[in-house]
Image (cartoon, rainbow, N blue to C red):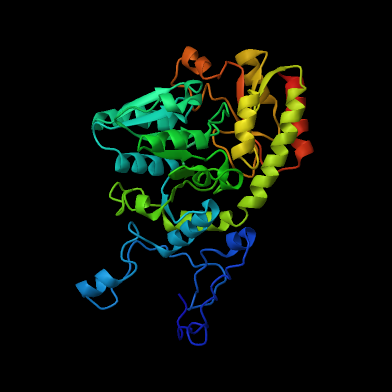
Length: 410
Ligand SMILES: Cc1ncc(COP(=O)(O)O)c(C=O)c1O
């Protein structure tokens, strides 16, 4: 270490003015870039500083009353970097409040464990993410919470599905990986008639393509690991909705899965480009769908709205774009699917989705490996089923990669 006089900080708090509040006439794209900014009175940084700290000192030493009045005390309960990202999420879903968790599963489990009591029932269409299915099947029943899983076809008539003890409906739309869509308005009407809440996992759509709260849902959940983070470099989850409900969901994070400030800092940076990234993925996925629908080796292309005119009508009514996820069933079955993965040169083989890079995976060996073949087939996942997450690369490159790999292997 070199000796010498320590340099005094260049910036002085004096003379720095807080940012002006955003004008009320600022439009959505402007809000998304600027919401959640915090004045940095020390150095004047344009990007909100990263408060990578677990605790905050009391305003007056050892003063309990000062501690109670302080805005931040302990990062599990609240942290300015995390709150900055939460502000953008509120903006994106047009909501009063948002809460970030360490993962999508952290967000889902905190929500269900906080809102349901022993003896109450949750109803959920079956085509849901494997981790959520595990929570419903293995964890909630141990606390006396009843779980009613219904088929995606039965989910078309939600009016039939609410009993006296049903308190909450958990929907994933579009579903993962078959990309079916559930009618959110119809579910919300049916649930509210029975005094139940509707919680929607909208991860696959992202807030750019779908806003469940505007369609009557009570809460929206995202695995922010996917489109919101968007660069495959963080794990996070969000619950967004009215303040009154958010206050009931683990207010002191006693379930212990708050988002770490560094992940929140990365997330905040990513959210500024969410609209650009998702619109590009939407457009790229459309091209991939068109090309694969023409390919003789492809039995079926799964994409929101494609299964039937009825689902097309629902998707049209509740989604602005159809998203970047595309699944295909190959005529050649499991071996053709395995060969396709081996032959792709741009799509990387990895289980997640929603990032800038295109990924490919086989639900039969990843998210749905715990199900029997018959159970998978009941959900529409046949042996030749391949899931694609279409990124933001050149659309022609992605189509060429897929068609060449199909020609070489499948
Ligand atoms: C639709 C959906 N919801 C929730 C999750 C869980 O999110 P996380 O992996 O961030 O815990 C996933 C994960 O893949 C998912 O696909």
